[in-house]
Image (cartoon, rainbow, N blue to C red; front, side, top):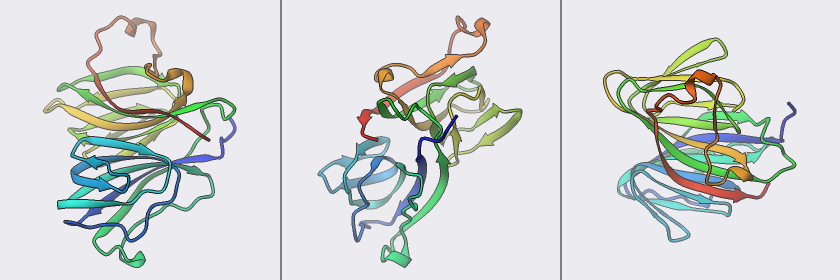
Length: 225
């Protein structure tokens, strides 16, 4: 499959109490998820913990009195450099870490897209049976832990760690036996999936089995590309 010419990135920004951007972030399709603390955005939006925002224009933000940790997901042109904040650009009370930077091979670049942010929560020992998705995305663990089996390899992710799934590659997920687990996810999907699930199970015997995962939606927006 040929590249779409886009990349999807996830950056973690840590802001000290009252920290604010010196200059707005450039215009592009972006989801900001508030993992900890609180955040005020330049369009007047207030984000509390476990809330998310979507926008496509320039945006600035400032942390509340307790500071904030935010997960920033950005869809950008393939040759664009990531925007990382810190002392070098005058944002001394903000520190950015680029966690995932992935080239996108789908969805079909000739069709409409949506940008979706949701969370997936599992009970102790919950699994996601072998499945694929109809578009690529990045996941970040918010609580618990999760093992991802795909492409003949297994990787376990802990809170704050992120990974990319291209979509059409089969994935099996196993979560912690000791606590509930949850991750935040941003995907780029075909526009006809707005309001609909993107998951497709690989094995016929799994279709009618009870599914342990539960979903919470934050953003499901058509985007220009």
